[in-house]
Length: 133
Image (tube, rainbow, N blue to C red):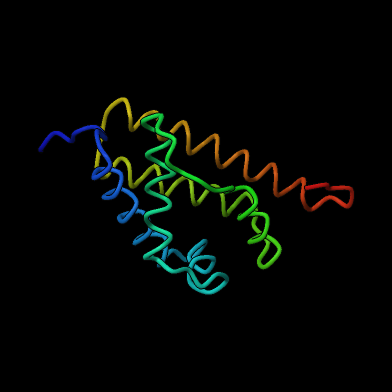
């Protein structure tokens, strides 16, 4: 079996993100968010996600956006639950494992867990009557 390499450059992140979203689109648990709830322009969305992960994994300030705000808006259209976030985290981690191995992969897995937990917390908070955004 061939040894996998670590995530080392933007092209690696591009491969990861494209692989991940191919899986997501057909996923029975979260796919509908990407194919029915929001009509994403994949040509715009994929580079934004690559920027996001490049910023996180390589400490580059290239991502500009507010992912929490975007997910709060999405939750208003179609409620998201712990099941959805666990599936997102699982698919992302599986995509990492299928393609790569190494320190950056482990960092990405940690970031996925942190992001998933934070998003879920913020969405749970937004469902409270006294939530202020």
